Length: 209
Image (cartoon, rainbow, N blue to C red; front, side, top):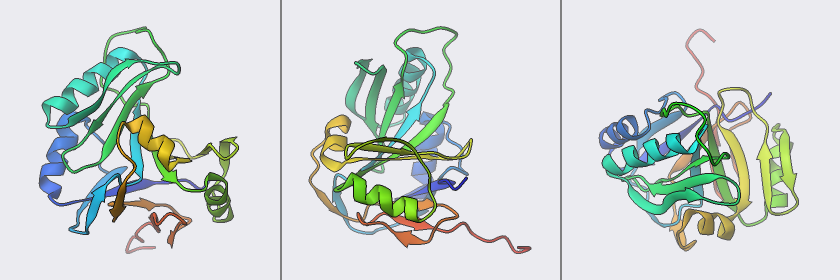
């Protein structure tokens, strides 16, 4: 199944960013990569990354670790209609949602991440869904022009589409912004640039391929 293999965050200081992501989240560097960039960007970059965990205690643990590592709190970790979660912004500017669909702890607290979800804030969810379908992605869930979730291989980055204004509200930020998104997707269906300016790159070919 075609899916998003990884994302690359474009940051001003890759060394500092790598230290933050190791201390805060312990992220797999094969799935969330870093590279230097000084491309102009301002305000909301039009996306968030979500770390999905098994229970509220895990969310709290990651939330504390992120703040201790230098993140800014955009929304405190708390219960909601859909579960439990909070939002932080990394020192490089990337917005991270730390979430779980459950409201009670059922086991020992860990910092284990079950899933990474990339949510793109787009102007026209239906049109962008069709764009990705035409390039080989498979829709997993779709709620009209409000939200789309694409299916993916185990261990891949789950890609979802949301209205830009709605995503900004979820993240707790103004949706005003411009310039570079400061992120690139990697997938076998690339390379391309989608209707909202998000870039998807093809995986690097190994020397023996």
